[in-house]
Length: 550
Ligand SMILES: [Fe+2]
Image (tube, rainbow, N blue to C red; front, side, top):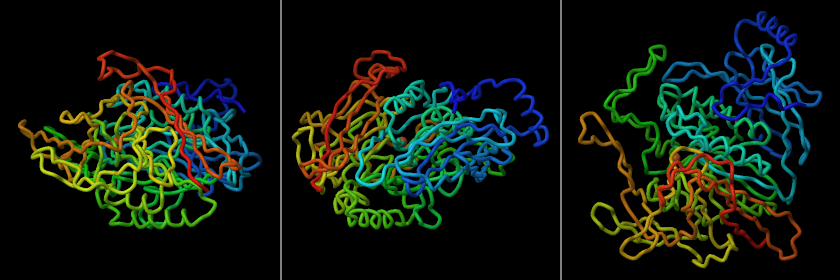
């Protein structure tokens, strides 16, 4: 199988390498019969099916409507489901396809090809290989970051590092990658959302066609006029494991690989902060006439807190309880976009909503690790369990406020942490976006690390400029005694997790975590003022080990 049609890096244009001209002529003839639409596959990506040991879903898009879109794997031809949608701002129709590939062998490598009758590469269609998950207590590697964006710097918050970040995933050859929200910031480019998603998909494709990339929604997946939570662009492009909660498919889900239960959440449902789609003004955002939608007035934001009316939290409790009852599960790892424990000074910081709704469940069911994006940096907490009361102060008045500050079970940075005693939080918003936020808070009064905390909604408020609105930052601060390590040298990196195979004599399960970072990639380093540029060099920042008794 050839990979020569895999995308060449940046920009997401020029998807297809040339094919031999007789083949092209045949394709042109076939396309003429099929109509004028271009069904050539692009943005190819994999996700796990319900059981990662036996199934994947192959998803892709095409510029026009594909005729008989399908996947070939071995002797099988699997028809794809067509799932088009029309963007609610610019009225463009996007064509996506999803083929469920089941009945696979665990821990096996498969080759597949993606094509359609009107594929301009039909004579030599796009092809790639992937590996299914192992069965039982086997070792495996996964990687994670969030806040990726695209390499096309025409778009707001896109930056060249996002191409190197995708290459970094490939360089570590993980079984799969966790992409923890804020995928491409299409909502910040509201009149061209499908184009931004296309560049995102074509950038990821160089890795996500070879191994599943499992996403969660972030605040920037929330788009005006695109479904009840604004997730139509996101949900149409991904087929994710079924959570069996009617009306909320794809927003949250879980899956098992080896002895690890992975739980992916949508924190938009519980956070106080208002950070989804927003029209700041002074002009209204006017959708294309074809959409039939009225102008969206300045000061309008798409605020989601409470959208599932408790359905997600109830599902989370059921899922965690079942996981901890299951003796074949050693580890529970959660990914969500927004943060319960971030001390970023220039980013968003922490949110009381997650601490109220979900941290008690993480304590009760001994969640080992929580992976977040949102703040474009890297921070690691000590293991935390329970909360310190009355540890926060309101920014405006200095009054004491209960931020439910996560309580560290140790403040010794030993490099080995027993997560049966407390949950480690990692901030990994270090993908590739053009807004590195590697500045962290310090309490000038006592020199302690300081975190901002949202304890209430920061809905849009009119500024001193007529018709211009803004959303305030976090309303409280606390001494971040839970913060163990902060990367001040760059806002870019990738975390690599090696789940150790069974059979260690110590009776402990372990996960080795290595964080690699791209020093010098910051457009401007906030600490030194040095100007940087995108870099392919990811070097080790730190290694630590999680253990838990079996
Ligand atoms: Fe975010």
